[in-house]
Image (tube, rainbow over all chains, first blue to last red; front, top):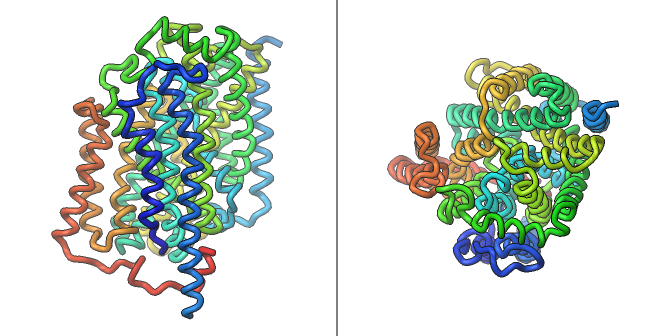
Length: 76
Length: 491
């Protein structure tokens, strides 16, 4: 089984911090951004940013797993 | 034709065409137990994405979310956050579940517990808990469907009759073609849902206020505190938000049907890619919220917020368009309902009935029993939907609080050698008991935090403590040498 790397876990923490733990900081109406109350703007922004961030986690995992697998095949 | 005939004909026509597409797509495969439940593990990125999207965007997302935006305001933001974060979280354990699932031939969530902890009793308890908490989720879909047909018929058809017809259809297509039909019918459902969300999410604010920004300005002027937390509620502040987002995003893939959807993937990389792109699907949710927020000022004073979306559509558009939106809503109820029924039937037949009551059954007999159970489970949910009235959100949160209690057993099962069946069993039972107690005595939120989250913390502590106090057991995930094809499967 391929366990996730610490690096990829740290990347995944970013959206959790932005959308969940920091709610006190961004849960307000003003300023309106693009016609949206600030909290709704913030959440939508992070829905869009999250796949970009996770694509970095994906790349980091893929590189590591491919390396592991080719090592395994080489050893067999 | 009068309004209700037009709206209902459109709904019925779209649902019928979708069902035929589903049946046709599924009918080309020979159905054995593995094909019926996990589609022979042959789904690539697109089909897994569609299947999961099909399961995730339920009537709750459609009617419940707009209903919350309408009746509660700010706290409803938790839905967008948890959906996005659930996919992020899935990146770190679904590929691993797929790997062990492939290695040991798992088809259900309880198979995971059976293999990892070497206990058919633990697996049987897990399957019972799974089925019990699937039922409120199924009831939610039925109730939503009833609301749709009721509004679309302009009050002419009773909710009970509507639910009987639609669920006859769902049961029929689950019967014939299993998980493949569901994935294909999801295609139609997703397109309709996307179309509906964009059209009314942008169209309604323009129609009444001249734009989304103008709608929000008007709303903030009329109700300055509605959009921030705790909105129109008393207890749903920031600590409730954080704990609820954590509970529901961690608990998301603990639903037996979502957990077992993992096994339909061709390889574990499909699941990683899926986790990266799925958050984009959440982008329809803000649009659904816009509808709920618009409805506050346009159709104020509804007793049941779940009616808000359809009521404003009925008021604003012609009946055939109400039919299209109603059909989108009906499919968002029927597709997940089909999957829920399928998962519950397979769980009960394979992980409870066979091991506990009739050990000699063949796979074919289990598949037959599962099909009988489809009818039984549908009838139970139908009965509950007709005879108990609860809002959609309460049903969903109850289900989440229950199924999330599987989390310690799943996560530790993958990543902690020391965990054992005594620990997981005690933790699970304690967690479920705490949930049941707090919910039944109406103490949710519990001192400002989500009761299910509190129960989950207790569950984790008990699982760790009991595991450390009892003997270490063999961990088949690490101790059994990998079969030769493992490297191939993950390539």
